[in-house]
Amino acid sequence: MAFSLLESSELEPECDQCKDGYIGPNCNKCENGYYNFDSICRKCQCHGHVDPVKTPKICKPESGECINCLHNTTGFWCENCLEGYVHDLEGNCIKKGKTSPK
Image (cartoon, helix red, strand yellow):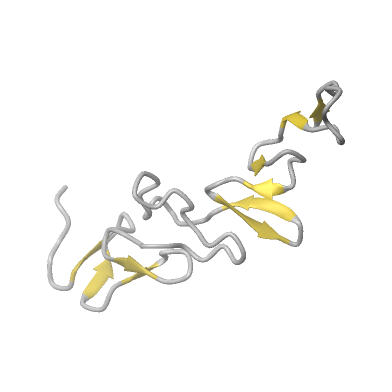
């Protein structure tokens, strides 16, 4: 954590270089793509099944639950397949009865 010099109009020092995952004037808030776990910002674990452009937060900042799972996935961490889908050998969710291309 680095602090910048105080301007005469400023009351408190502000961080100018937060650690990865942290933002805010005092580096005490979690950045998009991170969630607060016991006052520590942890990276969201959505296994690449959330679009960070459409859903910048990726997961709920208070719990880490993934928001808007894609690729026929569901679950807290987008770790399960939707009903009617199963995991193929590579871990992708495909319709039951189909085989994945080689």
